[in-house]
Image (cartoon, rainbow, N blue to C red; front, side, top):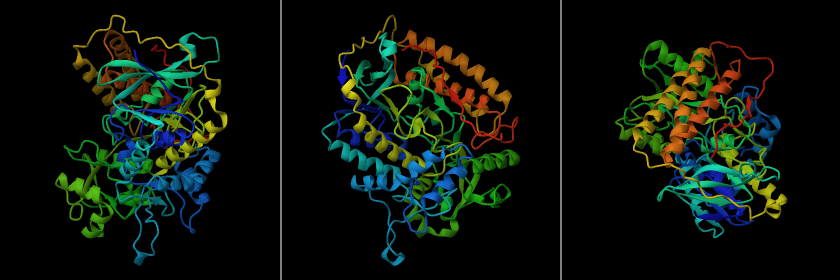
Length: 537
């Protein structure tokens, strides 16, 4: 078995992972683990932008109030303030790395062309057209490629974290590395480091319909849970209200920025309906908009609703939204002349591994940043475009913290890591079982643990997911590991976390809406699951 030794291991190659790698490269040698090509991550598909206070008529306090309002009473105000305050420095970093945000023309006064999205009281969203995530990803990858202290390991999927407790050592339990599947060869390697950073993103693929890319299987959350690290607020799954509805459009997101620039949500007859649900209309926060669309679809029996932005004109739309215009045109929809059919789809995990703004978890040596972490910023519902901000700021905070504590000074690099045990495992000839279980997990979550929930649906989902996890566990031990099996194992584990968290929250708050408990409880509390998953490596 191959062994790789680093000063830092970063698992994930989105904005949080790559900024972590660049900042940590000043302190030592960094290995970046990416299960596909490095650019295949949720960051690469982000359209809207990154929220940050940039103008004199805006303030951190106003951004904070918008974030707290969206978070439905569950945000940690001190965390929100710390991350928002760190925003301008994170933007400076991105500009230093070569990112170019869209700017206004000289006739319009120059400066950044700031967008506005649902829940924001001001224009504060920096963007690069509607390709913001792709431009961020490419700028960071160019810098990483030029950094000799960073080793990029593509097509490598982390299987599980390695801890001293699992190794049977008597010292304080800490993370010492991870087992990794080298997907091109099928071999398993071990990476060893005093610090492991999980920047693996969310898990939209846990649901049948999602805006996320195929890699979004919440691997980091599942691995941390198996290692005994507390997981928080997993019931809060943000369903993006406006994914393109078309039989050939797999997961194309129609950015919230489209509504920010004046699009209205309408029914098949072209009638606006959001005003019946919220005074902010189509600019209400995502949880309200998604539930309103769900209600309209169920009441009308129609498979979708529509966005109407025709009044902005072709020239403006093709300039401000070139990607959305081109992608819709590819599916036969001219957004300058036609309504855009949209439906909600699983988009963002507000919960995750309990972590501080500096990424620290309860397991020494393990840090979590980005969507995989639950820091307290998002509360019960994420404010649009705060996610890229969180990833950038927390990666910086983590690197600053590690520069101070230098955990490598106390790390024994001679800790023995045993070779991966294949035991009696054989190559699988039952691929149909994996595909069936994949579909069943995702269908179950969509049907029973979606935008509107009930106790009965959650109970039914829990029983089925527990049975599926047992089947998957047996399959995992009987056959040689593959990427598909590892991802299936992870989405099933995360599905159970979501269901259990939803069962524990006996109220409707933010993204968690249940017909059995439609009211808010007087005190907002986090939902924390701290028992390990009970699975061995």
